[in-house]
Length: 266
Image (cartoon, rainbow, N blue to C red; front, side, top):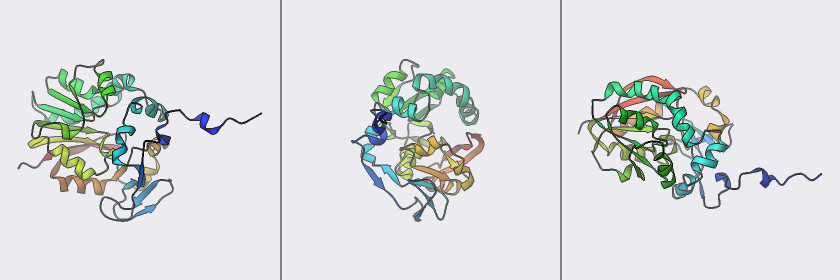
């Protein structure tokens, strides 16, 4: 009996073998320290701060393909994650309540809020129902069309660079900062959107020990678009450097802090 061709076991549109995606290697942490190899192929650990970095990653110009039409279909299925319509319902039960509990005490009625990379927009949907003026962004026109069937939250196609400066009282970033090629640029682009004294809520993988990272799932480490797993040391340094003062990090979800920070008034 002939064994099946290995290629027949892979999805035809597997993002890991997409010929349009170009790859690059890095050997330094964001803090400027060399990365050492670790037990998980493709990842390096910073000798100084303990941050993990994806050392074999898609180039920034390849992101249009990484986050293209298959991101919310094949890519999510391969990672064992529900598709977008189901996530709209699931997120309400497993995370949105936690985010609201962390964020609402720092808001005033009627504030303007944006979430950059809002995905299924369930959090913005709930904020809009509470009277806030909300706007989201998403990379893919196809995702925006899908979300339009779930909620009437307005979504702009693009990134933080496609939104007006100093226009928002609060900016939300959930599961996005770990995807950024340059988290410093990422933070600056988000702070540009905030009015002086505005609030930013960030949820991204942040660990306090190497043991915590070794407990992450295979899916977490496999995802080619996860570029950084921040140590608490580096994460705090990046926020301070950007001009953010942490107000609250007492809420935790999936083992990572939900951080509420204020933009330094200027």
